[in-house]
Length: 228
Length: 299
Image 1: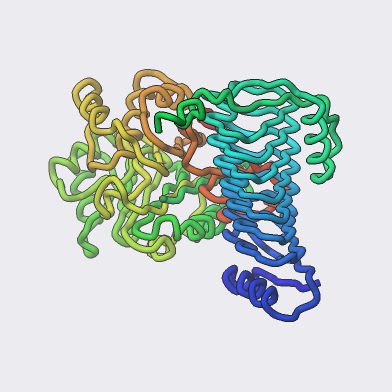
Image 2: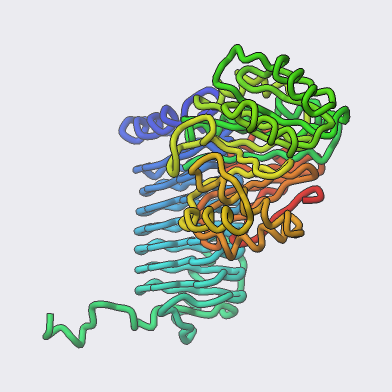
Protein backbone atom coordinates (compact mmCIF):
# COMPACT_ATOMS: atom_id res chain seq x y z
CA UNK A 1 0.00 0.00 0.00
CA UNK A 2 1.38 3.38 -1.02
CA UNK A 3 0.28 6.19 1.30
CA UNK A 4 0.03 9.75 0.02
CA UNK A 5 -0.84 12.34 2.66
CA UNK A 6 -2.39 15.62 1.51
CA UNK A 7 -1.37 17.26 4.79
CA UNK A 8 2.18 16.90 3.55
CA UNK A 9 1.83 16.89 -0.22
CA UNK A 10 0.07 19.21 -2.65
CA UNK A 11 -2.72 17.73 -4.80
CA UNK A 12 -0.62 18.39 -7.87
CA UNK A 13 2.24 16.31 -6.42
CA UNK A 14 -0.09 13.45 -5.46
CA UNK A 15 -1.49 13.33 -8.97
CA UNK A 16 1.98 13.58 -10.47
CA UNK A 17 3.14 10.65 -8.33
CA UNK A 18 0.21 8.54 -9.58
CA UNK A 19 1.03 9.42 -13.18
CA UNK A 20 4.74 8.79 -12.74
CA UNK A 21 4.09 5.42 -11.10
CA UNK A 22 1.72 4.45 -13.90
CA UNK A 23 4.51 5.07 -16.38
CA UNK A 24 7.17 3.42 -14.22
CA UNK A 25 7.84 0.11 -12.57
CA UNK A 26 6.06 0.35 -9.21
CA UNK A 27 4.47 -3.05 -8.76
CA UNK A 28 2.41 -2.04 -5.72
CA UNK A 29 -0.85 -0.92 -7.33
CA UNK A 30 -2.62 -0.01 -4.07
CA UNK A 31 -2.80 3.62 -2.99
CA UNK A 32 -4.45 5.43 -0.13
CA UNK A 33 -4.79 9.22 -0.06
CA UNK A 34 -5.07 10.70 3.44
CA UNK A 35 -6.53 14.01 4.62
CA UNK A 36 -8.36 15.05 1.46
CA UNK A 37 -10.21 17.78 3.46
CA UNK A 38 -12.43 18.65 0.53
CA UNK A 39 -9.57 19.53 -1.80
CA UNK A 40 -10.31 19.56 -5.51
CA UNK A 41 -9.17 17.38 -8.40
CA UNK A 42 -7.78 14.51 -6.34
CA UNK A 43 -6.77 11.41 -8.34
CA UNK A 44 -7.81 12.83 -11.71
CA UNK A 45 -6.79 11.62 -15.13
CA UNK A 46 -5.63 8.20 -13.94
CA UNK A 47 -4.64 6.01 -16.82
CA UNK A 48 -3.69 2.73 -15.18
CA UNK A 49 -5.52 0.00 -13.22
CA UNK A 50 -4.49 1.35 -9.83
CA UNK A 51 -6.66 0.86 -6.77
CA UNK A 52 -6.89 4.27 -5.10
CA UNK A 53 -8.78 4.95 -1.85
CA UNK A 54 -9.42 8.51 -0.75
CA UNK A 55 -9.93 8.39 3.02
CA UNK A 56 -12.34 11.25 3.72
CA UNK A 57 -14.44 13.85 1.93
CA UNK A 58 -13.24 14.99 -1.48
CA UNK A 59 -13.85 18.30 -3.25
CA UNK A 60 -14.69 18.92 -6.89
CA UNK A 61 -13.86 16.58 -9.78
CA UNK A 62 -12.40 13.73 -7.74
CA UNK A 63 -11.65 10.74 -9.97
CA UNK A 64 -12.47 12.71 -13.10
CA UNK A 65 -11.30 11.55 -16.51
CA UNK A 66 -10.59 8.17 -14.97
CA UNK A 67 -9.37 5.41 -17.23
CA UNK A 68 -8.94 1.88 -15.87
CA UNK A 69 -8.37 2.80 -12.21
CA UNK A 70 -10.67 1.96 -9.31
CA UNK A 71 -11.11 5.06 -7.15
CA UNK A 72 -12.98 4.76 -3.85
CA UNK A 73 -13.93 7.87 -1.92
CA UNK A 74 -14.62 6.99 1.71
CA UNK A 75 -16.89 9.96 2.36
CA UNK A 76 -18.75 12.58 0.37
CA UNK A 77 -17.69 13.91 -3.01
CA UNK A 78 -18.02 17.43 -4.36
CA UNK A 79 -19.24 18.76 -7.69
CA UNK A 80 -18.39 16.75 -10.81
CA UNK A 81 -17.13 13.53 -9.23
CA UNK A 82 -15.94 11.13 -11.96
CA UNK A 83 -16.66 13.75 -14.60
CA UNK A 84 -15.81 12.45 -18.07
CA UNK A 85 -14.87 8.99 -16.79
CA UNK A 86 -13.72 6.73 -19.64
CA UNK A 87 -13.43 3.34 -17.93
CA UNK A 88 -12.71 1.80 -14.55
CA UNK A 89 -14.75 2.51 -11.43
CA UNK A 90 -15.35 5.45 -9.13
CA UNK A 91 -17.16 4.59 -5.89
CA UNK A 92 -18.45 7.19 -3.41
CA UNK A 93 -19.44 5.70 -0.07
CA UNK A 94 -21.25 8.89 1.04
CA UNK A 95 -23.12 11.53 -0.92
CA UNK A 96 -22.20 13.20 -4.19
CA UNK A 97 -22.76 16.81 -5.12
CA UNK A 98 -24.16 17.97 -8.44
CA UNK A 99 -23.08 16.83 -11.93
CA UNK A 100 -21.81 13.44 -10.76
CA UNK A 101 -20.35 11.42 -13.65
CA UNK A 102 -21.17 14.23 -16.10
CA UNK A 103 -20.28 13.42 -19.72
CA UNK A 104 -18.96 10.01 -18.68
CA UNK A 105 -18.04 7.89 -21.70
CA UNK A 106 -17.68 4.53 -19.99
CA UNK A 107 -16.85 2.74 -16.77
CA UNK A 108 -18.96 2.50 -13.63
CA UNK A 109 -19.78 5.16 -11.05
CA UNK A 110 -21.35 4.01 -7.78
CA UNK A 111 -22.74 6.43 -5.19
CA UNK A 112 -23.96 4.72 -2.03
CA UNK A 113 -25.82 7.79 -0.76
CA UNK A 114 -27.73 10.47 -2.65
CA UNK A 115 -26.49 12.35 -5.68
CA UNK A 116 -27.47 15.97 -6.08
CA UNK A 117 -28.77 17.87 -9.12
CA UNK A 118 -27.82 16.97 -12.70
CA UNK A 119 -26.40 13.54 -11.90
CA UNK A 120 -25.32 11.99 -15.18
CA UNK A 121 -25.78 15.18 -17.21
CA UNK A 122 -24.85 14.46 -20.82
CA UNK A 123 -23.74 10.90 -20.00
CA UNK A 124 -22.22 9.27 -23.07
CA UNK A 125 -21.90 5.62 -22.14
CA UNK A 126 -21.10 5.53 -18.44
CA UNK A 127 -23.07 3.30 -16.07
CA UNK A 128 -24.18 5.04 -12.86
CA UNK A 129 -25.73 3.31 -9.85
CA UNK A 130 -27.03 5.52 -7.05
CA UNK A 131 -28.00 3.86 -3.77
CA UNK A 132 -30.08 6.85 -2.68
CA UNK A 133 -31.90 9.53 -4.65
CA UNK A 134 -30.89 11.92 -7.41
CA UNK A 135 -31.64 15.65 -7.60
CA UNK A 136 -33.36 17.69 -10.25
CA UNK A 137 -32.41 17.61 -13.95
CA UNK A 138 -30.59 14.31 -13.60
CA UNK A 139 -29.65 12.58 -16.87
CA UNK A 140 -30.23 15.89 -18.70
CA UNK A 141 -29.30 15.34 -22.37
CA UNK A 142 -28.09 11.84 -21.54
CA UNK A 143 -26.89 10.16 -24.72
CA UNK A 144 -26.02 6.58 -23.80
CA UNK A 145 -25.28 4.38 -20.82
CA UNK A 146 -27.41 3.42 -17.84
CA UNK A 147 -28.51 5.30 -14.73
CA UNK A 148 -29.94 3.19 -11.91
CA UNK A 149 -31.52 5.09 -9.01
CA UNK A 150 -32.51 3.04 -5.97
CA UNK A 151 -34.29 5.97 -4.32
CA UNK A 152 -36.27 8.80 -5.93
CA UNK A 153 -35.57 11.15 -8.83
CA UNK A 154 -36.09 14.92 -8.64
CA UNK A 155 -37.97 17.08 -11.10
CA UNK A 156 -37.30 17.19 -14.87
CA UNK A 157 -35.73 13.75 -14.81
CA UNK A 158 -34.17 12.82 -18.16
CA UNK A 159 -34.86 16.19 -19.77
CA UNK A 160 -33.99 16.20 -23.49
CA UNK A 161 -32.70 12.65 -23.25
CA UNK A 162 -31.24 10.79 -26.21
CA UNK A 163 -30.58 7.06 -25.92
CA UNK A 164 -29.53 6.47 -22.31
CA UNK A 165 -31.56 4.03 -20.21
CA UNK A 166 -32.87 5.24 -16.86
CA UNK A 167 -34.15 3.00 -14.07
CA UNK A 168 -35.76 4.28 -10.87
CA UNK A 169 -37.07 2.25 -7.95
CA UNK A 170 -38.79 5.10 -6.08
CA UNK A 171 -40.83 8.04 -7.26
CA UNK A 172 -40.04 10.47 -10.05
CA UNK A 173 -41.03 14.04 -9.21
CA UNK A 174 -41.50 14.93 -12.87
CA UNK A 175 -40.17 13.86 -16.24
CA UNK A 176 -38.31 16.37 -18.40
CA UNK A 177 -39.01 17.13 -22.05
CA UNK A 178 -39.15 14.04 -24.27
CA UNK A 179 -38.60 11.59 -21.39
CA UNK A 180 -41.26 8.89 -21.00
CA UNK A 181 -41.79 5.76 -18.97
CA UNK A 182 -41.16 2.61 -20.96
CA UNK A 183 -41.95 -1.04 -20.55
CA UNK A 184 -39.63 -2.93 -18.22
CA UNK A 185 -38.99 -6.11 -20.20
CA UNK A 186 -37.02 -9.16 -18.93
CA UNK A 187 -33.83 -8.01 -20.62
CA UNK A 188 -34.06 -4.72 -18.70
CA UNK A 189 -34.52 -6.54 -15.40
CA UNK A 190 -31.38 -8.52 -16.23
CA UNK A 191 -29.51 -5.35 -17.10
CA UNK A 192 -30.45 -3.75 -13.77
CA UNK A 193 -29.57 -6.98 -11.94
CA UNK A 194 -26.10 -6.94 -13.49
CA UNK A 195 -25.52 -3.29 -12.66
CA UNK A 196 -26.64 -3.71 -9.04
CA UNK A 197 -24.35 -6.70 -8.67
CA UNK A 198 -21.39 -4.79 -10.08
CA UNK A 199 -22.21 -1.92 -7.72
CA UNK A 200 -22.54 -4.23 -4.72
CA UNK A 201 -26.01 -2.91 -3.93
CA UNK A 202 -28.67 -5.32 -2.72
CA UNK A 203 -32.00 -4.41 -4.34
CA UNK A 204 -34.70 -6.25 -6.26
CA UNK A 205 -34.18 -5.46 -9.97
CA UNK A 206 -37.85 -6.15 -10.70
CA UNK A 207 -38.85 -3.22 -8.46
CA UNK A 208 -37.41 -0.65 -10.91
CA UNK A 209 -39.26 1.27 -13.61
CA UNK A 210 -37.66 2.22 -16.90
CA UNK A 211 -37.55 5.64 -18.54
CA UNK A 212 -36.12 6.78 -21.83
CA UNK A 213 -36.49 9.01 -24.84
CA UNK A 214 -39.77 9.44 -26.75
CA UNK A 215 -37.52 10.57 -29.64
CA UNK A 216 -39.74 13.54 -30.44
CA UNK A 217 -37.03 16.16 -29.94
CA UNK A 218 -34.47 14.73 -32.31
CA UNK A 219 -33.50 17.16 -35.04
CA UNK A 220 -32.27 14.29 -37.15
CA UNK A 221 -35.03 11.86 -38.16
CA UNK A 222 -34.01 8.81 -40.12
CA UNK A 223 -37.28 8.99 -42.07
CA UNK A 224 -36.21 12.33 -43.47
CA UNK A 225 -32.81 11.13 -44.68
CA UNK A 226 -33.74 11.80 -48.27
CA UNK A 227 -34.20 15.51 -47.56
CA UNK A 228 -30.81 16.14 -45.91
CA UNK B 1 -17.29 32.63 -8.86
CA UNK B 2 -17.17 34.34 -5.43
CA UNK B 3 -17.07 32.41 -2.20
CA UNK B 4 -19.42 32.73 0.72
CA UNK B 5 -19.17 31.36 4.23
CA UNK B 6 -21.32 31.66 7.33
CA UNK B 7 -20.95 30.35 10.86
CA UNK B 8 -23.70 30.51 13.46
CA UNK B 9 -22.78 29.38 16.96
CA UNK B 10 -25.45 27.51 18.87
CA UNK B 11 -23.20 26.86 21.85
CA UNK B 12 -22.45 30.15 23.71
CA UNK B 13 -19.20 28.66 25.02
CA UNK B 14 -17.77 28.94 21.51
CA UNK B 15 -18.56 32.67 21.18
CA UNK B 16 -15.09 33.86 22.29
CA UNK B 17 -13.66 31.72 19.43
CA UNK B 18 -15.90 33.00 16.63
CA UNK B 19 -13.16 34.86 14.76
CA UNK B 20 -10.63 32.06 15.24
CA UNK B 21 -13.07 29.49 13.79
CA UNK B 22 -14.30 31.77 11.04
CA UNK B 23 -11.03 33.07 9.55
CA UNK B 24 -9.79 29.73 8.13
CA UNK B 25 -13.20 29.25 6.51
CA UNK B 26 -12.96 32.52 4.60
CA UNK B 27 -9.30 32.01 3.77
CA UNK B 28 -10.16 28.70 2.05
CA UNK B 29 -12.43 30.62 -0.34
CA UNK B 30 -9.64 32.89 -1.58
CA UNK B 31 -9.36 31.11 -4.93
CA UNK B 32 -13.03 31.85 -5.58
CA UNK B 33 -12.61 35.57 -5.02
CA UNK B 34 -9.22 37.13 -4.47
CA UNK B 35 -10.07 40.75 -5.32
CA UNK B 36 -11.80 41.81 -2.11
CA UNK B 37 -13.32 40.40 1.02
CA UNK B 38 -15.85 41.35 3.64
CA UNK B 39 -16.83 40.08 7.04
CA UNK B 40 -20.03 40.67 9.00
CA UNK B 41 -19.76 39.90 12.71
CA UNK B 42 -22.68 39.89 15.10
CA UNK B 43 -21.83 40.67 18.71
CA UNK B 44 -24.04 42.27 21.27
CA UNK B 45 -22.13 44.79 23.37
CA UNK B 46 -25.14 45.46 25.55
CA UNK B 47 -23.90 48.94 26.45
CA UNK B 48 -25.53 51.02 23.75
CA UNK B 49 -28.67 50.63 21.66
CA UNK B 50 -26.99 51.23 18.34
CA UNK B 51 -23.69 50.95 16.59
CA UNK B 52 -22.52 51.83 13.15
CA UNK B 53 -19.41 50.66 11.33
CA UNK B 54 -18.06 53.55 9.29
CA UNK B 55 -15.27 53.81 6.74
CA UNK B 56 -12.95 56.58 5.63
CA UNK B 57 -10.37 56.39 2.86
CA UNK B 58 -8.19 58.64 5.05
CA UNK B 59 -6.29 56.32 7.43
CA UNK B 60 -5.64 59.18 9.86
CA UNK B 61 -9.21 60.37 10.02
CA UNK B 62 -10.10 61.92 13.42
CA UNK B 63 -12.87 59.57 14.58
CA UNK B 64 -12.83 60.89 18.17
CA UNK B 65 -13.42 64.39 16.84
CA UNK B 66 -16.32 63.15 14.73
CA UNK B 67 -17.79 61.28 17.71
CA UNK B 68 -17.63 64.38 19.90
CA UNK B 69 -19.27 66.46 17.18
CA UNK B 70 -22.15 64.09 16.47
CA UNK B 71 -22.68 63.49 20.20
CA UNK B 72 -22.98 67.20 20.83
CA UNK B 73 -25.41 67.71 17.95
CA UNK B 74 -27.61 64.72 18.83
CA UNK B 75 -27.45 65.41 22.57
CA UNK B 76 -26.22 61.95 23.58
CA UNK B 77 -22.73 60.50 24.03
CA UNK B 78 -21.17 58.80 21.01
CA UNK B 79 -17.95 56.76 21.23
CA UNK B 80 -15.65 55.84 18.38
CA UNK B 81 -13.27 52.85 18.23
CA UNK B 82 -10.85 52.82 15.34
CA UNK B 83 -10.40 49.47 13.57
CA UNK B 84 -7.88 50.14 10.78
CA UNK B 85 -9.72 52.10 8.04
CA UNK B 86 -13.05 51.53 9.80
CA UNK B 87 -14.42 52.71 13.12
CA UNK B 88 -17.30 51.58 15.29
CA UNK B 89 -19.56 54.36 16.50
CA UNK B 90 -21.62 53.40 19.56
CA UNK B 91 -24.47 55.44 20.93
CA UNK B 92 -28.01 55.49 22.28
CA UNK B 93 -29.02 57.65 19.30
CA UNK B 94 -30.97 55.87 16.58
CA UNK B 95 -29.04 54.58 13.57
CA UNK B 96 -31.39 56.66 11.41
CA UNK B 97 -30.32 59.89 13.19
CA UNK B 98 -26.65 58.88 13.06
CA UNK B 99 -26.88 58.08 9.35
CA UNK B 100 -28.68 61.35 8.56
CA UNK B 101 -26.15 63.38 10.53
CA UNK B 102 -23.24 61.72 8.74
CA UNK B 103 -24.79 62.37 5.36
CA UNK B 104 -25.22 66.06 6.21
CA UNK B 105 -21.83 66.65 7.82
CA UNK B 106 -19.45 64.03 6.40
CA UNK B 107 -20.79 62.85 3.03
CA UNK B 108 -17.46 61.13 2.27
CA UNK B 109 -17.77 58.85 5.29
CA UNK B 110 -19.37 55.58 4.29
CA UNK B 111 -21.67 53.67 6.66
CA UNK B 112 -20.72 50.00 6.23
CA UNK B 113 -23.30 48.72 8.66
CA UNK B 114 -25.88 49.90 11.15
CA UNK B 115 -27.78 48.11 13.85
CA UNK B 116 -27.43 46.91 17.40
CA UNK B 117 -25.11 43.94 16.98
CA UNK B 118 -23.81 43.96 13.40
CA UNK B 119 -20.32 45.12 12.40
CA UNK B 120 -19.12 44.93 8.79
CA UNK B 121 -15.52 45.16 7.67
CA UNK B 122 -14.58 45.07 4.02
CA UNK B 123 -11.68 45.99 1.85
CA UNK B 124 -10.05 45.37 -1.50
CA UNK B 125 -7.28 42.76 -1.37
CA UNK B 126 -6.59 39.16 -0.49
CA UNK B 127 -8.99 37.77 2.13
CA UNK B 128 -6.19 36.83 4.56
CA UNK B 129 -4.82 40.37 4.39
CA UNK B 130 -8.26 41.88 4.92
CA UNK B 131 -8.90 39.67 7.96
CA UNK B 132 -5.46 40.49 9.37
CA UNK B 133 -6.02 44.20 8.80
CA UNK B 134 -9.15 44.22 10.95
CA UNK B 135 -8.03 41.62 13.50
CA UNK B 136 -11.02 39.38 12.75
CA UNK B 137 -9.30 36.29 14.20
CA UNK B 138 -9.49 37.70 17.73
CA UNK B 139 -13.12 38.81 17.55
CA UNK B 140 -15.86 37.20 19.59
CA UNK B 141 -19.53 37.07 18.65
CA UNK B 142 -22.54 34.90 17.99
CA UNK B 143 -22.33 34.54 14.22
CA UNK B 144 -20.41 35.73 11.21
CA UNK B 145 -20.88 35.83 7.46
CA UNK B 146 -18.14 36.42 4.95
CA UNK B 147 -17.51 36.84 1.26
CA UNK B 148 -14.58 36.61 -1.10
CA UNK B 149 -15.28 38.49 -4.29
CA UNK B 150 -14.45 37.93 -7.93
CA UNK B 151 -16.10 41.02 -9.36
CA UNK B 152 -18.57 40.56 -12.20
CA UNK B 153 -21.33 43.13 -11.74
CA UNK B 154 -19.54 46.27 -10.59
CA UNK B 155 -16.16 47.80 -9.82
CA UNK B 156 -13.54 46.39 -7.48
CA UNK B 157 -13.86 48.90 -4.66
CA UNK B 158 -14.25 48.78 -0.91
CA UNK B 159 -17.90 49.75 -1.30
CA UNK B 160 -18.48 47.08 -3.96
CA UNK B 161 -17.31 44.30 -1.64
CA UNK B 162 -19.88 42.25 0.22
CA UNK B 163 -21.61 41.94 2.69
CA UNK B 164 -24.28 44.53 2.02
CA UNK B 165 -26.24 46.12 4.82
CA UNK B 166 -29.35 48.07 3.93
CA UNK B 167 -31.47 47.87 7.09
CA UNK B 168 -30.59 47.61 10.77
CA UNK B 169 -28.69 44.40 11.53
CA UNK B 170 -29.47 42.83 8.15
CA UNK B 171 -26.66 41.76 5.87
CA UNK B 172 -26.46 39.72 2.72
CA UNK B 173 -23.72 37.94 0.81
CA UNK B 174 -24.25 36.57 -2.64
CA UNK B 175 -22.62 34.12 -5.01
CA UNK B 176 -24.10 34.48 -8.48
CA UNK B 177 -25.62 37.24 -10.55
CA UNK B 178 -29.08 38.77 -10.81
CA UNK B 179 -30.55 39.53 -14.22
CA UNK B 180 -33.32 41.94 -13.20
CA UNK B 181 -31.46 44.13 -10.74
CA UNK B 182 -31.62 47.34 -12.80
CA UNK B 183 -35.39 47.30 -13.04
CA UNK B 184 -35.82 46.17 -9.44
CA UNK B 185 -33.48 48.91 -8.23
CA UNK B 186 -35.60 51.55 -9.93
CA UNK B 187 -38.79 50.05 -8.54
CA UNK B 188 -37.37 49.97 -5.00
CA UNK B 189 -36.17 53.57 -5.38
CA UNK B 190 -39.51 54.86 -6.61
CA UNK B 191 -41.99 52.76 -4.69
CA UNK B 192 -40.18 51.85 -1.50
CA UNK B 193 -37.91 54.88 -1.03
CA UNK B 194 -34.79 52.72 -0.88
CA UNK B 195 -31.38 54.32 -1.44
CA UNK B 196 -28.32 52.62 -2.91
CA UNK B 197 -24.60 53.17 -2.42
CA UNK B 198 -23.32 51.08 -5.35
CA UNK B 199 -24.26 49.65 -8.75
CA UNK B 200 -23.90 46.15 -7.33
CA UNK B 201 -26.71 43.65 -8.00
CA UNK B 202 -26.33 42.13 -4.53
CA UNK B 203 -27.12 45.46 -2.89
CA UNK B 204 -30.46 45.33 -4.71
CA UNK B 205 -31.18 41.94 -3.18
CA UNK B 206 -30.31 43.29 0.28
CA UNK B 207 -32.55 46.32 -0.28
CA UNK B 208 -35.36 44.08 -1.48
CA UNK B 209 -35.21 42.08 1.75
CA UNK B 210 -35.07 45.24 3.84
CA UNK B 211 -38.20 46.46 2.09
CA UNK B 212 -40.04 43.17 2.67
CA UNK B 213 -39.05 43.16 6.37
CA UNK B 214 -40.28 46.74 6.67
CA UNK B 215 -43.58 45.59 5.20
CA UNK B 216 -43.90 43.08 8.04
CA UNK B 217 -42.44 39.88 6.59
CA UNK B 218 -40.27 37.59 8.66
CA UNK B 219 -36.88 36.97 7.06
CA UNK B 220 -38.07 33.56 5.86
CA UNK B 221 -41.16 35.13 4.28
CA UNK B 222 -39.03 37.84 2.65
CA UNK B 223 -36.77 35.18 1.13
CA UNK B 224 -39.78 33.19 -0.08
CA UNK B 225 -41.03 36.34 -1.81
CA UNK B 226 -37.53 36.89 -3.23
CA UNK B 227 -37.71 33.53 -4.97
CA UNK B 228 -40.45 35.01 -7.15
CA UNK B 229 -39.09 38.53 -7.60
CA UNK B 230 -35.33 38.03 -7.90
CA UNK B 231 -34.34 36.59 -11.25
CA UNK B 232 -30.92 35.09 -11.82
CA UNK B 233 -28.48 32.70 -10.21
CA UNK B 234 -27.82 33.00 -6.55
CA UNK B 235 -26.86 31.44 -3.31
CA UNK B 236 -27.59 33.96 -0.57
CA UNK B 237 -26.52 33.87 3.06
CA UNK B 238 -28.42 36.47 5.04
CA UNK B 239 -27.68 37.50 8.61
CA UNK B 240 -29.96 39.12 11.15
CA UNK B 241 -29.37 39.96 14.80
CA UNK B 242 -31.01 36.73 15.91
CA UNK B 243 -29.89 34.26 13.27
CA UNK B 244 -29.21 33.58 9.66
CA UNK B 245 -30.77 32.11 6.53
CA UNK B 246 -29.61 30.47 3.34
CA UNK B 247 -31.44 30.23 0.02
CA UNK B 248 -30.55 29.15 -3.52
CA UNK B 249 -32.41 29.96 -6.72
CA UNK B 250 -34.66 27.28 -8.31
CA UNK B 251 -31.95 26.15 -10.75
CA UNK B 252 -29.32 26.01 -8.00
CA UNK B 253 -26.25 26.32 -10.22
CA UNK B 254 -24.36 28.23 -7.59
CA UNK B 255 -22.78 25.81 -5.22
CA UNK B 256 -23.42 25.57 -1.52
CA UNK B 257 -22.92 23.05 1.24
CA UNK B 258 -24.06 23.12 4.83
CA UNK B 259 -23.03 21.31 7.99
CA UNK B 260 -24.63 21.26 11.42
CA UNK B 261 -23.71 19.93 14.85
CA UNK B 262 -25.17 20.61 18.30
CA UNK B 263 -22.63 23.44 18.65
CA UNK B 264 -22.84 25.27 15.33
CA UNK B 265 -24.29 25.43 11.85
CA UNK B 266 -22.24 26.58 8.88
CA UNK B 267 -22.57 27.24 5.18
CA UNK B 268 -19.87 27.54 2.56
CA UNK B 269 -19.57 27.48 -1.18
CA UNK B 270 -17.29 24.47 -0.90
CA UNK B 271 -16.81 21.78 1.72
CA UNK B 272 -13.12 22.56 2.19
CA UNK B 273 -14.13 25.75 4.00
CA UNK B 274 -15.91 23.61 6.61
CA UNK B 275 -13.29 20.87 6.82
CA UNK B 276 -11.52 22.20 9.92
CA UNK B 277 -14.50 23.13 12.07
CA UNK B 278 -14.54 21.26 15.41
CA UNK B 279 -16.62 18.10 15.20
CA UNK B 280 -17.21 18.34 11.45
CA UNK B 281 -16.52 14.63 11.02
CA UNK B 282 -19.69 13.87 12.98
CA UNK B 283 -21.70 16.76 11.51
CA UNK B 284 -24.78 16.40 9.36
CA UNK B 285 -23.56 17.58 5.95
CA UNK B 286 -25.91 18.35 3.08
CA UNK B 287 -26.41 20.43 -0.03
CA UNK B 288 -29.26 22.95 0.32
CA UNK B 289 -32.12 22.23 -2.04
CA UNK B 290 -33.09 24.70 -4.76
CA UNK B 291 -35.75 27.31 -3.95
CA UNK B 292 -35.77 26.27 -0.29
CA UNK B 293 -35.25 28.65 2.62
CA UNK B 294 -33.13 27.38 5.53
CA UNK B 295 -33.12 29.42 8.74
CA UNK B 296 -31.46 29.24 12.14
CA UNK B 297 -31.93 31.18 15.35
CA UNK B 298 -35.01 33.35 15.14
CA UNK B 299 -34.36 34.45 11.55
